[in-house]
Length: 435
Image (cartoon, rainbow, N blue to C red; front, side, top):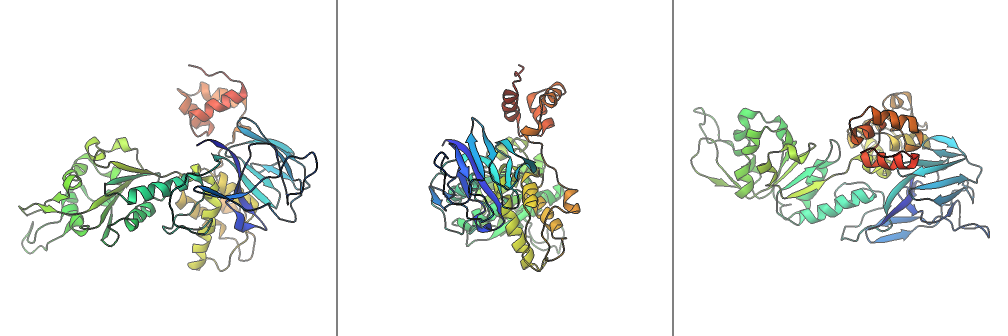
């Protein structure tokens, strides 16, 4: 499905319930309050709540402090030219400007009023059946987000939950692997059966067979009790092995027969046992690091996006974390969030993803009750903002290329997502690609 640039609402001081709404920018538009326009003006931005198969129109922004003609937006091939027409300041990636060229991943702010993310996304999300839940809130599985990336995860979950094949969940640390595994179990025909979870990295190499398959009574010593093992405990349900990539090759080999036919043998027994189970495994490593014969026994994969790939969901996740802090009484009242705070949390480069975001929000909670949450000293010390393409000049790009052995390494030096982002930047700067 074709994609185009959108504005996604990240923060609105007087209309917080609209966070997550988006508007496509496929032609010249005016962003402002209401829909009144001068005779020679282009149309106003049209806001929608984008859900699979449908865009629900939500009307114009109505914040009184927003000018009727705040910005003029003119799309180019891969960017949006923004001209400030109103009284409120225009901020581009946190820097005050009068006009700018904004690309995907950049933030645009109307001082003290609203904050937006420029994102490249489909004009309409693909249709698939899903349960209804409040826009911007947690779905029935506890997953929060409205970006195309997280809707793709929901679609994949629905598909995998209807199957019985073993599945491998792939994603960086903190990307929500266990949450998705629990959703797969809860949605499956095995939901009434046991859910047995174990961190495979914590199983000692010498005890793998005993942990997985159990042991007979009086084995290895007289008086020792019988152990059922993970395979027996998960009979009729789901066995979840987290961090399976941390198991050594010999330990991985112990899983092959169990994955093939559910067969296993307790230590100290001669007979072969069978467990009716589905194995779900998760790892933050590349799939190729697993033994090929083990990887082949996981015919289904679920790939989870990093938080850096779904930045428009950051404000919604912040809201859910704050709600949890209230429930835990870690804070005593719902705080007001400053535009600068949401801007920096959105543009922060995440390594541990949701866990890292939760820590950053907790640092904000050090603010005294009743005060506006903004970028305090504790938070500022941990922020890592990736340089935007607008902040990179020709000399920086040339130096990075000269110091690198390939384009991927140069892109990493410049803080770009991959070599293709570097190629796009080189084209914009008029630099030729080297072989």
